[in-house]
Amino acid sequence: MSSMIFVNLPMQYAVALAVLMLVALCGIAEGQEFAGREKLRAHSTEFRKEVIRATDGVYMAVGYSASNVILIQGDSGSIIVDTGSNPQEAREARAAFGDLLGGPVRAIIYTHGHPDHTGGATVFAGNDNPDIYSHQLLVEGAPDIVRGRRDGGDQFGMTLPDALYINAGIQLQYGRVTPPTREGYVPPTRTFSGDQLSLTLAGVRLQLLHTPGETRENIAVWLPDKRVLMPGDDFYRAFPNLSPIRGTRLRPPEVWIASLDKMRDLGAESLVPGHMRPVMGADSVRAALSAYRDGIKSVLDQTIEGIRRGERPDELVQHVKLPPHLADNPYLQEYYGSVAWSVRAIYSDYVGWFDGNATNMFPLPEKDRAARIIGMSGGADQVLSRARDALAAGEFQWTAELADYVLAVNSENVDAKKIKAQALTELGERQINATARNYYLSSAQYMLRHLPPQ
Image (cartoon, rainbow, N blue to C red):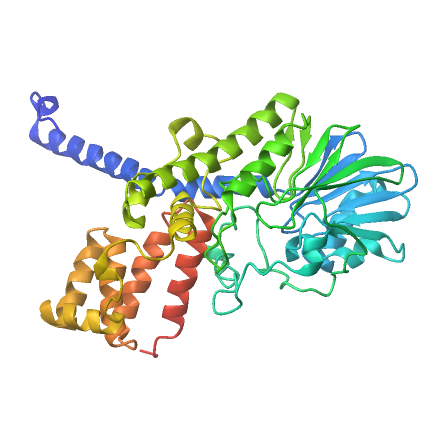
């Protein structure tokens, strides 16, 4: 801060002005530090409850469940595309449609098999006995996850207290109010295994297009007469979740890109996604799908080029970024998926786990490495002292890593757990990515919850 502005001021005023400026600067710094969190909070407006008209005869219920429920009106009844997470939320969506949902439900279409899209089918089927359509791959099963410790709950913040929870990136909440259930699921009765299925339901001409992306069985529903496209989970207002941290395989980016190309070429005038609000107008739809496609391709191309140069994952994530015109795009903000996680998953998928450093072929067990580092550092107390210093300095990642060395040797060290929980909380509060935030804060809560009573 320049002293020139204080030259002609009495000392007490100069000091007061300096304090005021320092407070103002600290407020700006704090605002910048938590800018990601505040953007995530603002993002919650995407999930406000509303029935939105996409065009004549096509409506979507947003915010009543973890995913949207879409209503297509026909001349002899209704068609439902995706059904919400569970019967309770499906009933709320059905009530929100009111008189718009006229006549019997003639058909239900699952864009893919995720529970938040299929768990409310019984509510919409009722006694109407509708046909239920999906791709054949949904029936065969899509084993993209190995069930175990990371079951997805932590990335959705299902156990977080309300005071810490904001949203789940592409949905307001999943499983926090009403636990996930399959009691409302009805198996498909009509499937197809090719690239598309053309049919007429309740007098409405439509095409079901196989568009693998977030899931291998995803289908887009295309209404050629109304120029309305329902892409399922291949498009949402957040960077795509190419590599979910809950424990799934890489969602192949090349396949996702091809699906976006196919959908973009349709020339849709309304884009009605499985999460959040629609995109309206042919130019806006094309621009949104193009940006989404280009964002995935940019990360893929940069990562492959870095692999060819011999770069390792830790090096790649330092410079593989979306170019500015895509980084600023509202449909590519990292509320849900992460560029860095995508880079690591692409690397592993293309060239395997080994990063090329011979030291890493047979590394020391984590406990052995930690014991040696702690010994070199003067003992666990010294390491924890350095961790406290790092925490005070705002070096939260380093704090967590230092605590991990101590916990690797003694998993019951209470001080290490407290310090790590503080570091994870600080890291979580600075995230724009809801998945990262929820996982950081959930992990911190588990550590604090299992501490012995003081």
